[in-house]
Picture 1 (cartoon, helix red, strand yellow):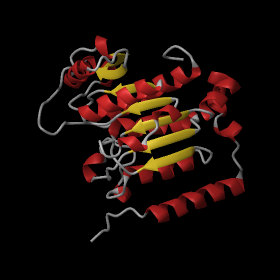
Picture 2: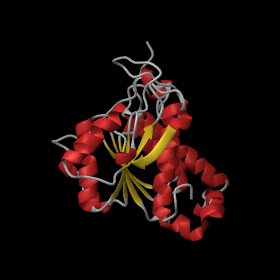
Picture 3: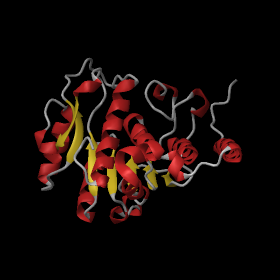
Amino acid sequence: MRSTAYDTESAMCHTKSAINAAEAECALSDEERFSRAKMLIGEDGIETLQKSRVAVFGIGGVGGFVVEALSRAGIGSLDIVDNDTVSASNINRQIYALDSTVGAYKVDVAAARIRDINPECDVTAHRCFFLPDTKDRFDFSRWDYVVDAVDTVAAKIEIIKRAKDAGTRVISAMGTGNKLDASRFRIADIAETSVCPLARVVRRELKKKGIEKVPVLYSTELPSVSGKVPASISFVPAAAGLLIAQKVVCDLLGQAQGC
């Protein structure tokens, strides 16, 4: 029987070997690695991103692509938070889900990949969910930006609240399941959302706590199907994650959305 366990240590060794081989052939500098981005945002922009600290809570379908894009944009410090392991049903939409990674902790796979993309990135993998018994582990004031890509309403509300209390910018992902049209995603204040059932619940709970002015990503598309288990396809959560990453980067650079 094929082993489904992901050997993180072996993966790290493989990653380090690949990096060493690449360095031996042609040592990459940050200038080379991010040269194309520098053409767009300038040297000051690159330095701003390299000095930025971002936390991503939940690195599944949406959060995984947020992390991917942020690491490739040159964010200098990433905290990734998730206690889930890769399952076969993740393969259709999650960037860390491969046949070889089934059974592995997503944060372990992600951390190895981030270090392979940018060895200079300070990545911290937190093998835990954001729950009542773990929430005090996190100091939200140390981050420049927080991305909420978790599934549960209670955790979303608490993440948003703690970020707001700390004066840290935050963006929250609403529902992406049962969607087929990636062009219907929008980023707006939670008060301006419509159609999305999750956004409606989150909006109500935030209002109870007096929390306002929260940017969220949501879809204006009516669900294509319904069911206890949300349906999904490869490009929808990916598009959502990339849009969130765009918002984070543009905000950190102090530019209007769209840069």
